[in-house]
Length: 264
Image 1 (cartoon, rainbow, N blue to C red):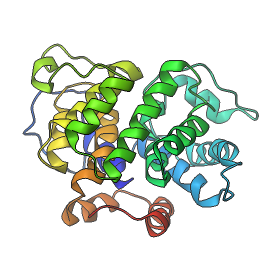
Image 2 (image 1 turned 45 degrees about the vertical axis):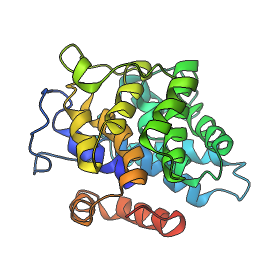
Image 3 (image 1 turned 120 degrees about the vertical axis):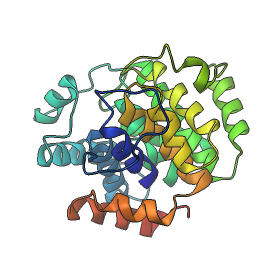
């Protein structure tokens, strides 16, 4: 899960001032946590609190996303989601925005099978993003994380995504010049996954994602969530990342990792 958070932090300074290079400053005082990390941690908190059969997972996700969203109102939320955060009885709003995929990493981590990753993904996604493409983007991400967790190779993950979710018939170098800022799943998730597929290590994954010049924090959060379980996260990057998290959020991360582990 820290892979998603670190991707969010690294991409945060480039979200609205995109650049097309990989040799950017990786972390600085201009980087910060955004809604990608906040909502990922809300879902992680829900897994920590839910019943053993996960029967209350969806309800807890609503509660915790609203709680953390209201506690951290400067997270950079989209307009519809910001309204959803404020509602007393929030309802899904048929979104296919990439917010569904940026927050789903706990599902792939907790899952014990591909089918369970899919079930968890639907439970945490349909409370807001109940459009088929919103559900698909989240599921593809959760499944890719699960496949990385059980030791599948980059090419095996690419092939699974290609056969079941998105055509992966492009390269990062091939699309970089024409790729533009986009907030929908179908134009973010495959590009984020390819950023991982073509990478040589964890840091290179995030550099690939940010260098596309799009929705940088979300691209890097999705890519990083998969890369963590293939490459692991270098200890120095782990130590830098946690400094960006307030104590309350760091506790959620620590509690989640204590229960479900993480890749080193």
